[in-house]
Image (tube, one colour):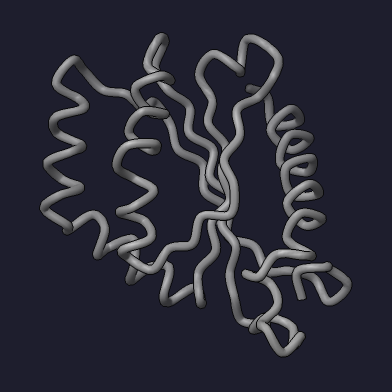
Length: 147
């Protein structure tokens, strides 16, 4: 996928996410106060090897969502592109972390988790799944509905 295509896709995903989250309990607490301003959002784009996207999606559906949550990583949303060829090998998602330091700590804890290690090893028994991972940490702007 070209840089321009990824950029356009990321913009669309983030625009949708901002609107959807504006009314989410994740964004506002019950008292109506805005969410903490030091949260960090992470845009992740996984590019799979040919034919391996279904296995990656099964991993997220069956294991990774629970593991992420257990390790303090909040899932905001998951998407696949509609248009080929990227629709055949791309998973896009947005996560939220308490802070950048928390993100680093939580990712390390996840990688060190024996359950995650066993799942990753088992799922790759037929060969590697992910060819490339792109990760972008983001801060909501002062005019964002996320603030």
